Image (tube, rainbow over all chains, first blue to last red; front, side, top):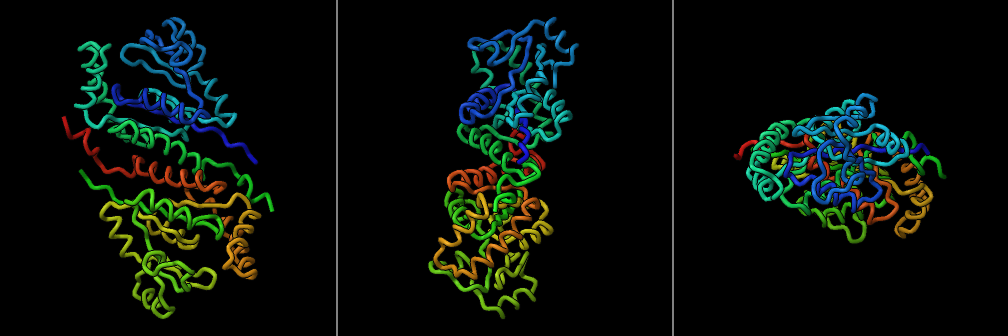
Amino acid sequence: MIRRRGTLFVVSAPSGAGKTTLCREIRLRLPDLAYSVSVTTRPPRPGEIDGADFRFVGVSEFQAMLARGEFAEWATVHGNLYGTRARALEDALATGRDVLLDIDTQGAAQLRARYPDAVLIFILAPSVKELEQRLRERRSNMDADIERRLVRAREEIALWRQYDYLIVNRDVKEAMEQLESIILAERCRVVRLGLTLPDLEVRN
Amino acid sequence: MIRRRGTLFVVSAPSGAGKTTLCREIRLRLPDLAYSVSVTTRPPRPGEIDGADFRFVGVSEFQAMLARGEFAEWATVHGNLYGTRARALEDALATGRDVLLDIDTQGAAQLRARYPDAVLIFILAPSVKELEQRLRERRSNMDADIERRLVRAREEIALWRQYDYLIVNRDVKEAMEQLESIILAERCRVVRLGLTLPDLEVRN
C-alpha cells in the first residue's frame, strides 16, 4: 500500500466572514488535521497565543526568514507581514497528514501555484452589509480600520472564482457542516488516492 | 440570480457493497435530493415497490422505450435490462434539483459521456472476502448466483478509477457520512455555482 500524501486545505475570507471561528471549530472536530501556524509581524490580539495562533516575530526576523527562502507563501495584509513556513507543510504532507491553512487571497494564490492539488475554500458573509455589521461589533476595531477592511473585503470577494469551494456563512452550524463535508469528501476523491487500492486488489 | 442547475450523483457498486442501504438512507437524510427510479425487466424482490424502488416492466415494453430513445443510459446486468429515463432526469436538473442515481458501471459510463459534470461515486466492500460473505448472508441468493456476482464484482472493482469518489464501506455510519459529505461538498463547488454570487455582488 502506497501511503497517501496529505492534502492542503486553504481557507481564505474577508475579515468578518467568520473564518477564525470556523477554523478553530474544525480543528476540534477533526483533530487529525494539522494546522499551519502562520508567522506574522502583527501584534498579538488579546487571548492569542504565540506558537498556537500565530508565531509573532519582529519585521527584521521576518525579513531574515524570507531571505533564507523559508516561506511557501507570504503577503502584506493591512500593513503587516504574514508567511507560511514551507518546512512544516512539507513534513506534514510527506507523512500523509492533511493540513489546514488560514491565509489571505494573495497567499492562497501562491500556494495554488506551488501545490496545484491544494483545496482552496473561500468563506463569505451573506452580504457586505452583514460583513460591516460584524466588523463593527468587534469592539477592538476603530472606524478607520473598519473602512480599510471593507475596501479590502470588496477586493477579496471579487476573487471567489479562483477558489474550489465557496461557503456562504449565513449560519455557523451550517457553515461548519459544509467545511467538514469538503474535507471528508476530498479524502474520498479518487485522484487523491494512491496507485493501488489498499485492500481490494491485494487480498483474496 | 441565475438558478443553479441540478447535479447528478451517480452511485455504483458491486452487489454486496451496501449501495442499496446507503442510497435509501441518504434519501431520508437529504429529502431535497430527487431519486431516479430505474426501469427494469428484473422481477421484484420481496418488499420492493413498483414505481418507488424500480419501475418493473416486461422485456417488450423495455425494448419499446429503448426504440423511442427514452433512456439516458441502459445496460444488461445479470441477464436483466435496466434503464434510466432521460425525461425525468432532465426535468429535475432543469429545476435545480440534484438527482441520485443507483446504477451499474456501464450505465455510469454512459451518463458521464452525456453529462460530463455528473458526480460518480463508487462504493466498495472492504475486501472481496467480505463481499462474498455479505452475498452469502443474503438468503435469497443461490450459490451459482453468488459466483456470478463475484465474477462481475471483480470486473467492476477494476473500474474504480473512472469514478470521482471512492467510499470503502467498512462501517455503514462512516460510509453514510462520507456519502453525505460528498453531496454537501459538491453543492459548495465554485464550478457548480451560477455566474453571479446570489447576494454579495448585488446587495450593497
